[in-house]
Image (tube, rainbow, N blue to C red; front, side):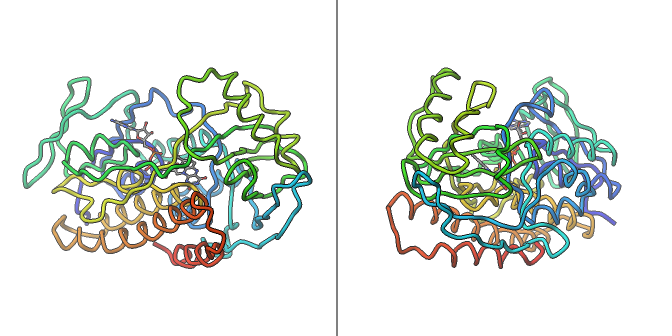
Length: 377
Ligand SMILES: Cc1cc2nc3c(=O)[nH]c(=O)nc-3n(C[C@H](O)[C@H](O)[C@H](O)COP(=O)(O)OP(=O)(O)OC[C@H]3O[C@@H](n4cnc5c(N)ncnc54)[C@H](O)[C@@H]3O)c2cc1C
């Protein structure tokens, strides 16, 4: 028995695809509307922590992810000195349980492709290049309209359409992402042989300099700085700025800097933070993932939390027989405190760096998040 038999999902990112896979696999008719024209758009890397890997196993894609990612259990802190001196090497918590590595790095478009393939395998329909422009609901369902003028009647609409969620606006939720004051340069380059796990350099010309292996031959490297208006730069100018900043770090950064060319897909993003503090639904429309909460990637939990939203929502829908207030109360009780804790910790970590606070207890903050997310969502 399921509370829904036909569901529309707006957005084919991690949150949308995890819910699509589970619902379609559970016998629900699922249509995913994705604005992008195709799944394999260019992108950078992503750090997936154990709790995300556990969810990916539950949706049947862990083996494929394992084949196309780079797993590790260690993180090192290095000094921003010319040698990149290793200050400490820590064994990370396996937040997904002992059967998954603490972390897997991978190329984002590969993850998107695996999720989409699995969604199609279990019978979900994906409509690329399509956005939802209208939602009209009554007690029994929602009628949605797409930008192509098509209409469809469904039991539930899941708005998994990311940071600037049009679904969030359509249902009148006003909370939205706020800039935190930091920006990040990211690039996708060849893996220096000595890079076998994430290294983090705190301080120097940037707040954080780091990298994460994503495969035998690749890593993504990042530099976090005070937010600046970096719009309007040519690709060559972006490369030049990232090379300049990278040049002040030691260790593998010298090799990384040399690989920063226009093929390294250098790009810049501003950090945001928000949590919709009360209900994520309005009647039969609900928002999940970055639409409902976002955090700076200082603890690399955004996609993990998005995947957990999709898992919890879909599992509850398959196990419940009606979409009543009790359903939503339980859903919010399972998701809002957990997502809020992660957002708060990730934002605080960034805030400490912006303020130059040196006595913030970083291990306690990160350890608290690891302990929390180690418990299945
Ligand atoms: C710089 C940076 C680095 C990050 N690094 C990490 C990391 O290492 N690890 C981690 O766990 N998290 C990381 N995150 C966070 C992570 O990327 C997000 O939390 C995660 O992608 C959210 O997934 P989502 O499915 O909610 O949204 P998204 O991945 O944004 O997916 C939303 C989808 O909706 C589509 N869409 C938007 N509007 C419409 C519309 N009108 N109609 C149809 N479709 C629409 C979009 O095209 C997109 O495909 C990082 C974030 C940033 C900004």
